[in-house]
Image (cartoon, rainbow, N blue to C red):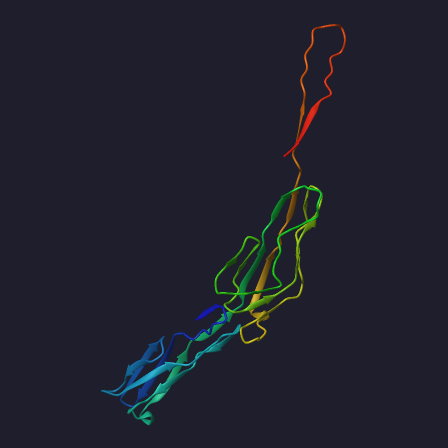
Length: 219
């Protein structure tokens, strides 16, 4: 069995355990804890999976046998166990783009918090989204947003090259993630201005007609 890292132990992998006696053998595949297996006659045993893999790595599954009243010395046990594999989780951090009209002031793009803790689901706000951060795992990183004053599209903000992720116990699980960034842009749009010239009329008299009046209406 395999899954991407999520901070929760992977415990189920199919396996086969064979019980052989001189006059009869039984081979049983099991996938869940507490599987009861009938051997010879009314003799039974219970096989319980005990393997567990939480961090990014692989390990062979393990099991325990409860023989009960069955005599263990009458049997030869052979196993063929599955592997528990945890792969790095894909973590995507996206800072959303921002658009503002020009007003002569310095503007900054959307911000990203210095620390954020996963809840097992995609985290979405007006400023950013985080997908793939395990429940109770905390990402610590510095983000510098895009910044600008004049009408233009400014380079994307920047995340620091280094970051850490720790689980609820304070253990470093940074290596359990493969992180991808989408940095936000800042677009300062041009300010719209409407200029309306006034009107004038007169009876022809051979001289130029002029009207100097106008209105300036910022939008």
